[in-house]
Amino acid sequence: MGVQGAKPLGLLLMITLLADHRFGTGQRGNELLAQGWAAPEDGFVWAIGRDCTLVLPPAEGPGRLVLELTVDPFRRPPALRHQRLRVSVNGEVVGDRRLGGTLAWWLEVPAKAAAGPLRVSLHQPNATPPRALGAGRDDRRLGFRLSAAKLLRVRSAPAPLRGVTELQFGWNETTEGWLEEGFGEPEDNFVWALGRRSVLRVPVDGSGQPVLAALDIRPFLDPPHAVRQRLVVGQDGRLLTYLDLQIRTVVALLLTPKKGQRSVLLQFEHVDAEAGAARLRYEDGRPFAYGLDNVRMFPAPPAHVPAARAPLRGSMDDGSMAACARTLTGLELNELAVRFEGFGNGCGFGLVQQHLGYDQPGLLRFAGCWQPQLMTAFSNGFRGLGRADALHFGVRGEIDHTWRLIDEVYGLNIPTPYSRLVPPPGDAIARAGRTLPRLAEKLLEDAASGDKIFVFRSEQAMVEAGAVALRAVLGALGDVTLLWMTEGSDTQTGGVERIGHRLLRGYAHAVNGPDEEIVSVMANALILAEEERGSMTRTPAPAVP
Image (cartoon, rainbow, N blue to C red; front, side, top):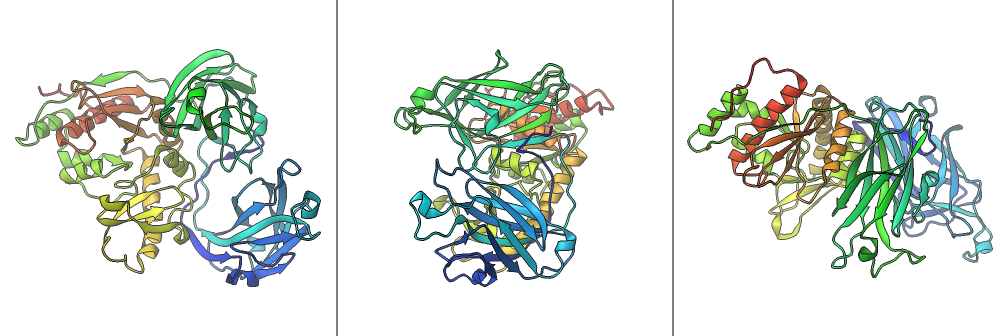
C-alpha cells in the first residue's frame, strides 16, 4: 500500500547464530570497536560523535548473512524524541531508520559486501551534545549505545505472505500519523489508548474491497478496580462491533471502505476506561484503556454458509463412539487423529491423539503459546526460532516435574523429558536449536498444503474476533481450516458449528477429556471442513444415537 511504517510480511527459516558479540565492561566484543566509541560501561558502549565503526570477523558459508544490532538511542525529551541511524557494511548502505527505544535491528548484508571482514559504519546525523541538555560529562556527542552485534545465517529464501501488510506502533516506528486522537506517546512496542475515546486511521488501497484488520490489543486491567475492557467500535461513524476484552488478544475487524477511499477511521469508545484506571493514569491525567501493538491487514475472507452438527453419542469403553465416528467419517480413530494438529496451550489434545494411536512430533503439540505470540510467529514464519541465545530451561514451580524449554522469541513453553532434579544434558540447547526449525518448517508445510485441521484452545477468555484473526494469518499461508475449541453447555458438548470461512467452533468441557467429547468434535469438524471444501464423495451417514 506504500504506507510509511508498513512492512510486507515474509517467511525466513533455518537461521543459525554464527557469532554473538557483546559490548560493555569486560566483554570481548570491545576488541571489535574501531573508532568513534566511548569507554565501555556496564552492558553497553556509547557511540560518540556523528560517525563510528566496528569491524567484525568474516562469516563464511552458504545462505544469506544478517547482522543484528541491539541499540538504544540517547534521548532527552522533549528536546530530542528520536534519532536517526544509517548503517553501511563495507561501504554499502544496508539500513536507515529512526531510533526511539531499544531495538534489535535486522540488517541483511549484500553478498558482495559479505566477503572478508565486515567493516560496519554507523552514521548518526542528529547525535546531541549531552552538556547542551544538561546531562553529560563533556562535549562529545552521544548518539546511541550498542549492546550486541550478532551475525546470523539464513538458509532459506523469503516467501512473502499473500497480500498482508503490517503497521507497528512503538518508539522505533513512523506510524504516529495514523493515531488520530486519544492516544499517548508510543512506547517500546506499543502505544496506549487513553481516556474515553480513541480514533485510529487505517490505510486501504482504494479498490473498495473489504479488508480484515487484525488489531493486537492489550486491555488495561487494574484488579480489583477492573477485570475487563469493553470497547464499542465504529468505522467511519457507523457501528461496527462490540468487544469485551479480558486478556491481550488479536481481534479481527471487517472493514468495508468505499471505492476510491484510501483510509478508514476506526473509532473506539472505552466503556471501562475510568474504572480500569481509577488509581493509575497517564502523565496528563487521562485514564488508560488499551495498548495497541500492531495492525495487520489481510484480504477479507470469502463468504461462508453457517452450519452445525450435533454431538455424537457413544462410549469409548464399549466401542460405540468409535463405531459412530467410523460410520460418519469412514475412518478408524487413529486415522481420524492424523487429520488434526494442535496448537498447544496444554498437553490435552496431544494426549487424546496419543490415546487414539497417533503420536508424531509437532512443534506446538504440547507447547504453551498465546494467541498474539502465535499470530506473530506465523506472520514471521517462525523467524529466529531455535537460536541458542534465545533458548533456556526453566520450571513453573511445583507444577513441573520436568524441565521446560523456553523460547524467548515467541514465548513457546515446551515440556521436555528431562527431570527437574538433575541439570539438562549439556548439548540439549544445541539439539533443540536444530530440531525446532525443522518442526517449524513441517508446521508451515502442513499449513500450505491444507491437509490438516488446526486446533486452538485458549485457557483464558478469547473473543470470537480473536479466532477470526488467527484463521486470517493461517489463510495467508494456505487453505487452512481452524477448529477453535471452547467450553459449552451439556447439550453443546461434542458439537461443532461453522462460524466463518474455514473457521469452526467446537465445544468440549476440557480439551483433555473425556475422550468421547474430543472424538465427537473431531468427527463433526472433519465433516464440516470437507463439506466446505466440496470434497465429500458420499453423503455422510446420520449420527448414531
